[in-house]
Length: 117
Length: 115
Image 1 (cartoon, each protein chain N blue to C red):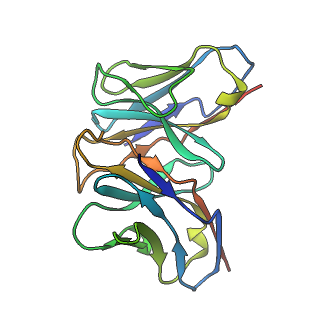
Image 2 (image 1 turned 180 degrees about the vertical axis):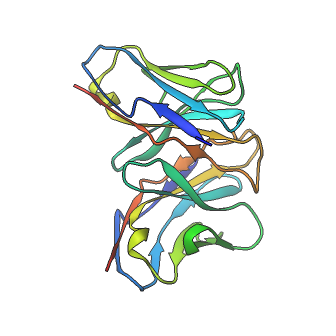
């Protein structure tokens, strides 16, 4: 079974401070891991993904995420938050073991990030 | 370049009514998907179509049917709407590659309320 947990429904941070949005995953094989962002009344937009190689992945808008296999985590980070980063963030996983289906992702519940000016 | 286009954006139905959600993509993608988004539950896959002429069930297919009309279009039909189908529906597509270029492109969503 594949699943993703985002333990925080809401994260609040002041503009200019670092931010972290947490994600842990569970798969039986090897994971592809994704972060998507959703702005109000919009569809989801791709931020970044981990497939293999370097554990630190850099993505759009200055975001990065660190893959930690031993802790089965893929936390999203940004060194200095902006008010415009306020949005709903989703972590997702795809188990790439045999029989896996392209595009069939399992999403977390989402974390609402609010950045205060 | 429009990407993934969904219609309608909003819809209110009465229990038992039927409707079809339309989705079209102009990126020449082979694979298309229907997800639903519910508060506190993230997105869940309803149906997908790996290529033109094929469709398969996802996690929550009950109460839905799909049609892959051609490579561009993938529709989702509710035959007899129920209040439990009140949700935001997203269509998505992906190019036929694994690995570095793999990612889903989403439409802007359809907000459906069933009374």
